[in-house]
Amino acid sequence: ELRTVRVHAAGASSVEVMGDFTDWLSVRLVERGNGIWEASVPIGEGVHRVNLRIDGGGWVVPGGARVERNEFGGVVGVIVVK
Image (cartoon, rainbow, N blue to C red; front, side, top):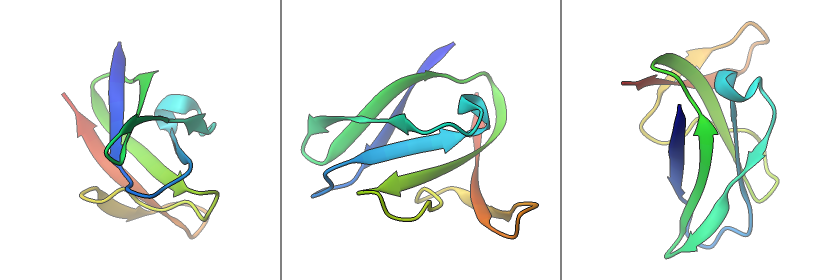
């Protein structure tokens, strides 16, 4: 099912998302105005791991997501989709 990923990143020039639902491939979001960035991606119900990258920086956990250490020693965000 396609779902909208929406991120508030005022002043950003690019925003990307990647997660288990993108096979850990980067998906570029589109600026919608007022600092809102969006992309429609197929995400099924359940628990998912996800990270964001703003302006080509490092991958970070989205605000509000639970933080979990991954098997590579980094961190990922954990979200629940219903």
